[in-house]
Image (cartoon, rainbow, N blue to C red):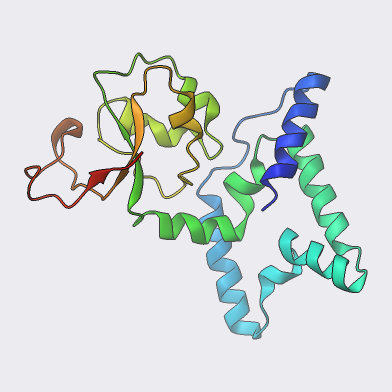
Length: 193
């Protein structure tokens, strides 16, 4: 939800030549934050995420004139600008933690053609989630990007100069060195454009 704003911050950071760390907080921290938010919400009977959700804060600001949303967004922008690249979305957002948990079972995945990959890392530079999620597929250990963090945004697919990456529907079982188990007929997956 704050991705457009963070794209603008990326542009400003590049223009101002400000260097920040790529991953100042481990990406799986958002899973634990999501679990804590869920637990606190269950204990208190109050939706805890609504207290600091940028989506909720901006909506409350528009509807009720509250300024909490401005402060939340300002904190996210300053964190993004001076501390870490996509630190809110990649590592801290509880909603992102829920998406990561659900994404582990997602049916639309990025598939790699190892023969077409030239290992230029253009896909890693384009990844909005975490470039490390591409490594098992790029190293040939898996046929698809399995990490729940993958948002299936297509940035890596669009950036690949050799079209080695593309979307695919279905989740093949894991097997030796990235090959998919089962014959083409037994799999119920198809490539999607």
